Image (tube, rainbow, N blue to C red):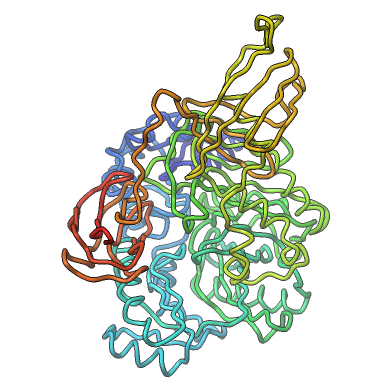
Length: 636
């Protein structure tokens, strides 16, 4: 076994690897960028080495600096985590040429499965079913459009070097193909340095079921399946294991196919074989198709660990150190059911736009597994993925595990940035999901009920106002000469202003007027009926929904709000493309500017019909949140 390893990653996965390494008596080295100098993974490790500035191209993607750090600290092996360099064969070669061990699969295996088109061809030879589509090398746009017509709409455009939904577009009719092809190619080039795509038939009632495999280079086993069908923008939201509705026959068929795929390439380490499954009429042994292989540990691996009792990181270290598979297939069993929810800093009503901010308040329940790279006081920066945590629960059956997940999400509190917490709570209570009726289109179909902006009740507004008032509680709380203490508080929630009157009758009772509504609040020893905190000029109230309010200074009520004449940057980012020019007539929803931020491409569209008056940015500009992008001529 290794004495010391370096983790070439950051955040929650770096902390996850450190946790297992420490339990095995293996020392760890962390690497970090300037943006992560105070990060938790840096604090957790035995040693830490600075790589460079915040941009990943100058830090976490600098394989030469990572290898140099490993050599200088005496690390014998490098664990890549996931993302960044985890599936980069050139990095693996460099690691091995430096006399170090790469904790993962071989260069040959990574290359074999690295491009979706060649991987599908390889898997066809291994006897795996694949989805109908075009996987050729000719990337002529007209040819791709013809192939889409031949396959039949709807189709998926997918980056051949892709993953995580990047470089992927669903196209439902031929007229939309050119724009989506251009967008997918641009995003693929930025994310993977490869603009090539493939075109596949889109399964109408698809489920995304993947099988965890583990090999030692000679043989392989599977650790059963995970259902990852709950997705938005082709990115996973809630994963579970095992898959609902799975039968012994289908599990055996999928598991055997996954093992066959792993053994066909001499796979060593943890990997995932992803299948697209037709869920229109239950699961069938002939109703699944190979989609891709992820030659690394997956974000959602905790659900597999929960149902199998296996520590996959420990297995990775043991196999990389030269040991054989820790268990044979017949020794692996499923116990209970598990769910994992991905908590992100993102604006759900705005289309899941990544968000930034300082986590002024962060509380997790004690009875759930929490994988997180941040804590209260940490910053969600524009440089990296905006994940806050993975919340995992396990129970004896699906119903109890889902109930635990819902309770864990209810007990989670986040303030300082917008999050998808309310969305996850609603999703965990969705009747169809609870019944096991899952497919990749569920969130899109139920967007109105799942993705709306949180509504503040009069009670929440009242509690926000009394929290904003900041009256110290004590023997003289509420004291005033002749009449009860009265306070006026103004709160802003989005575009809505709330004028609130507080009347303190005594230390423990406050009568609140919120518009026409009257709310009586009683101090309950820790809060006024709901947990709430004031952080700077904001107050956040935690209920079934988490709602934040700006506390308005009555002496400074003027605010400059952007109307329907401007397009502003929703977050810091790089201007990838400008599609309009001054004097150009546009219609509402027209593509105006493409912004690259948080490793994703975001299309900013016209807020109304009109004529472009000014374009304030150019391709290649780096902009801050709220920066003016385009102005329309004022309507007359």
